[in-house]
Image (tube, rainbow, N blue to C red; front, top):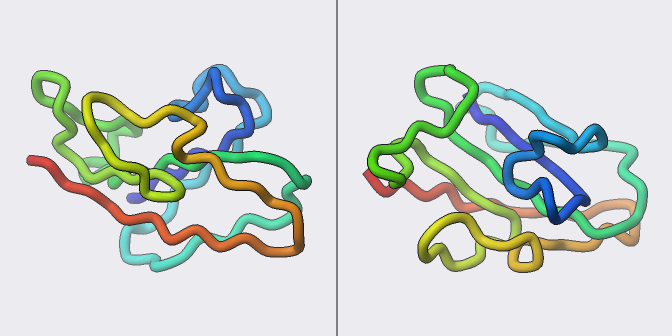
Length: 106
């Protein structure tokens, strides 16, 4: 499964855990696109994980992701996830496309 988190709250990126307004979706990993309609204009950031074992979380080994992950705008990954500002994109029209590159480290 692919687990998608879309938030406008920098404090809750990338996990969306405490964000009541975050949008989360789970779709089969074979899907090549996800469409989310009706978002108000504003700044957002998206995080995606490839939840290979369907346990609803990103599995890690010594802090290194064992499953695939990606972020809107495909920012460089160093130690830990990127900041909201690095993944932020703005919706100010009818449509905004984000091509998220999945990364696999182990």
